[in-house]
Image (cartoon, rainbow, N blue to C red; front, top):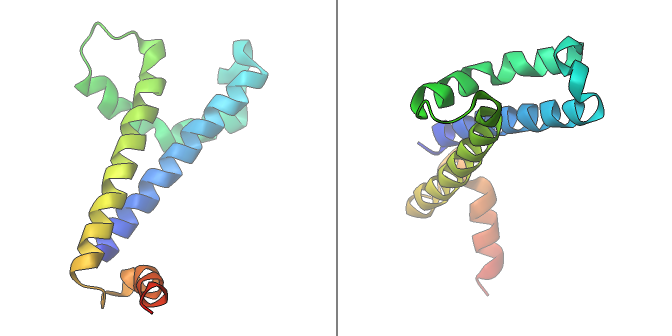
Amino acid sequence: MALYLSILKAVLEVALLALAGQGLVGVFNWSRRHQNVIYQMLGIVVRPFVVVVRWVTPGVVLDRHIPVATFLVLMFAWLGVGMWKISVCHADLTQPSCRDLAQVRQEQIP
């Protein structure tokens, strides 16, 4: 179970970094950001998440606010998956994905 949570956490991290990269590229040239190749490539990575957030949010939310909402949803999901992984690892430290937590626990025990 911890392995699957680690994979999900990594996917969320990639999406978060791609969304942050899109925002950073957009800051430098906001008016022509849709013509930037890097912005478009990062958009391919983020598009599935943005579509899901657009589908879930009510129609009152403006389209220009959807990337911010997507970032917040991904951030809270990343935090939730991280806490879930920690609780799963505390239940069974012998899982391969829990080695780092097991090492920290061994260092704390005098």
